[in-house]
Image (cartoon, rainbow over all chains, first blue to last red; front, side, top):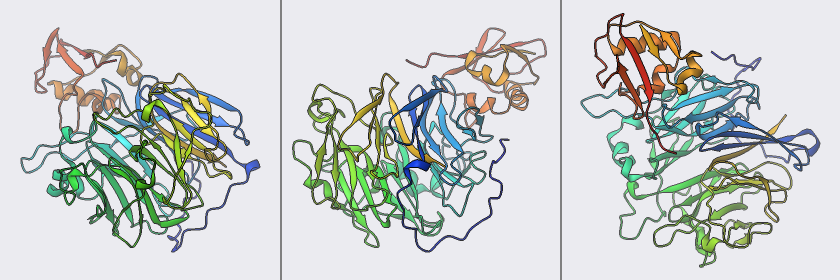
Length: 402
Length: 85
């Protein structure tokens, strides 16, 4: 078993209120960008100015890596969700920034079949979420087919979490392999409220948005206001396809969501999502995969629209890539495409493949299905390529190293 | 008995040919997992089903039966089948 590098993981009580996030001091922090692809993973180490980058990789060449995440609680533990074309799914763990990796002793796996019902097998772990800061070794994982898993030892052993994996109602909402994305339905956007480790959210593609206020013992459906494909019943969770959901660190009562059917915002305790994508330009629409929130301003978010018309090409609309930003909670949007190709660019940014750092101004990073990694040092005002010719990019995460 | 390990799993065994024991294919895989922790789950899922692109041969004959009997003199080949580009 890999040793835990933390010297004294002493528990701290969950804080009632989230600390107001502050911009990190440029001199003290270097940015690490973690890129997970269809054929391996790469780490990009930036300097303090985010101007020069050192590529480290490939790690796990040939492995399908769906997510690569650094634990913000120790700035040291990296988890990678991986499988290959031949081999079953697993999780790898590093505490030295990828110089060495150890495989999880027990990767996420469903319980054995019971009551004569068909048991399920994890095809791949899709999403990794470090839990609350008061639970230093706890992680959550979302899988395909959809399941929720938890590790209490920093990712070494994983157990099915909560009752939903085998709940008949949830199994109905999760549907079969035919009801999800082409490589399987996804459990994603596992979110922990920074004020309360018992307050959790997740999204299912398809299957809707769900919330727990008792640490995952019970869950409530949270789909009011979300639209579904024309002709279907919006009161049925199965028909809902949230693509990516994010909670605002500066206001944990506010969440944003990029959905198969539009862009949404919700301000708790309201249980109704508001479609804020209606203010997007009609020629572009408000369909896409990723959703990025500002680390300090809950009115500011970014999206990267794709073509969701007719047969759903899932490319940049009209071959012209551009991010969009709102600085007023979705009342209005502005296109950000300086530095990006002006046309004939037919890629997509997947739901985990766009992220922000916590610097001021915020740095943005996104990876494309054509294997390009782009960045902006000024909140999207200008983009520049960071890496090219990578395999199809599935996930991009940014972290600041202490 | 001798077990031929495919290249995709040699990060576990560090060898092409390894020795393991068991009266059935299931027992052999359990023994392999004891010797090389984590190896079995990459080939066999949590419902004890063979994964889609892993195949097992006993003395050159393919088997899909985890209860297939084995003798010490048998040889087992584990093969990674085609899985796309």
